[in-house]
Length: 210
Image (cartoon, rainbow, N blue to C red; front, side, top):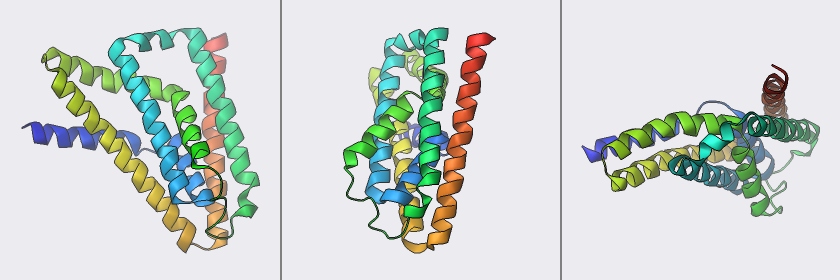
């Protein structure tokens, strides 16, 4: 019984991480430009941010983030980060040539990029407050802290598995696709990030003026 529920929560983690969003687009773009390990470390940084939000939800502090001022700050920060990353992706498309491209850059830079992009992603707050909040209510209602820890780990494992999949995919694209296709993917990824950035900017305006 516990095994089937554990696998179900792993699937939940994969399902929640899989939809196309700014993090997936950025991770794919980094993998194409810098390689597998940079993409993987970007994903690890995002997982660390997820763990922070899980802890905040558990402690009940996450409700502080629902304040209009905090939401506006997060939307604006997300707008600037995604817009900058998108523009950088488009402008640097001509640098995609060989598999050794940018692999000399420190992995810590990719890790921090994933961490900060995920941490200041307002959608992360909505996700963890809604999805993990319901998991928290269900498992704490059963009175078992151990179950909560195990099932929370299953969700993180599912997210980690998806991050590993995206890093592998981007590494495959990078090694086996032609430079023209790689540049095209980089541009599409950049435009996607710009689109998400625009969405975040619009949300910030709505919170400020409506």
